[in-house]
Image (cartoon, rainbow, N blue to C red; front, side):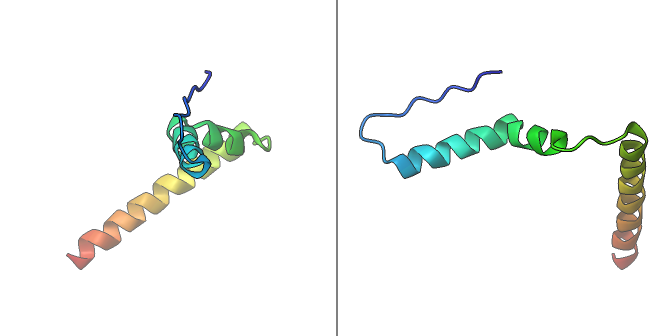
Length: 67
């Protein structure tokens, strides 16, 4: 998926760089690169997902008790 960004005439380089960083963030490329930096076994990925689910449930229980 190629990303294209047009730099306008007389646009400061800092502003163009900021727009480019936002474009990268919205496209999800950086997130994908971080994810693929190291190989993760499928069983480890499932385990992490399960732990994330459990922590979300705990957090929801704590929030409902306070209210």
